[in-house]
Amino acid sequence: MARSIRMLVALCAVLALAGGLSACGDSVPGNAVARVGDNLVKQSTFTHWLGVAALSSQPPGATAAPVVPDPPNFTKCAAAKANSAPKPAKGQPAPTAAQFKSQCKQEYDGERDQVMQFLIQSRWILGEANDQGVKVSDAEVRKSFDQQKRQSFPTDTQYQAYLKTSGMTEADILMQVKVSLLSTKIRKKVTKGKDKVTDAQITAYYNKNKSRFAQPQRRDLNVVLTRTKPQADQALKALRSGQSFASVAKKFSIDQASKAQGGKLPAVTPGQQEKAFDAAIFKARRGALTGPVKTQFGYYVFTVTKATPASQQTLEQAKPTIRQLLASQGQQKALNSFVKDFQKKWKGQTNCRKGFVIALCKNAPKPKTGTQTAPPGAVPQTSGGAQQGTPSQTPSGQ
Image (cartoon, rainbow, N blue to C red):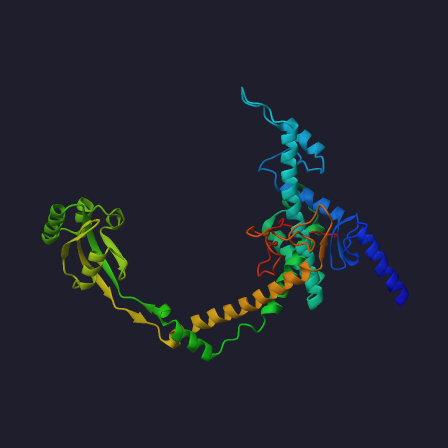
């Protein structure tokens, strides 16, 4: 047995030096695009989802079949683009074959990365669920699928049309539902019990953040803003003669917002208005006609219609809000910690074949300093949607 192991290790070393394998345990055969742990992501699965991605990138209302990029020469793709390209404007050169090929390569690179990220992330969640003993039954998957189907497709004809236009099978959608349910269950397991908050924690938070539970004093105003002092004097005279603020504001005010509200300016708090106007507001007696007050914007004439004093929520009043906040923070902290370990763990078990390497692969080149890396691996989410940065479907037959 020991001799066999030594021979295997030696063989691995020879093959690695010869360029046959990057590492024996991480090798990806020619019929696969990646290995995640002990599981392969097959080339046929990638090809299927590349077709789905090509369909999803079709513009709305498109009737022609999508052209799936065909690397490395992109012969069919470039020919299809040349055939469908509009005639160039007079005096403009027609696009070259090299330009069509470049377009095809750019489209392929984007769709390849999208599909690879999607397939790898799905495998990560399936693998993590297995490691954590998290399971969903076929009945759970079918129940969720039926609910979503009824909501999205009132008739079976619409559903069948969707399958045709999306390029998916029902098995694809069932797998999407399975991954989504597993993702939700993993998240619930990770955050379970992390929402417990003590009264001491609530009190400490309240004492440290009292200002967050305070309301400043507020004043409701009727106001007229004029461009000149003579105009303000005329407005003041009109108000003193018994004319309403609404009519005076309509005639004299240059402030369109309050003018549209009949001169009303509600819930003004200290520091919200221009300095001179602000000072006058909070010195004025309720109901007293005040002004003109000179500011950089013009001259204000106003009256305070309502004065609400500052208030402070008590600890007891703030408790429900603080408890909910701290519970959410506790759960998020647990989830963030899990996600960090989850990404590190599964990236370390993900090896991709040359030509299919993305940032989620262990054998991806290290990002250059100052460049932005691709989004990290899929994170178990609360919603039942697809994973971020992937097609909106989930693979089958990986």
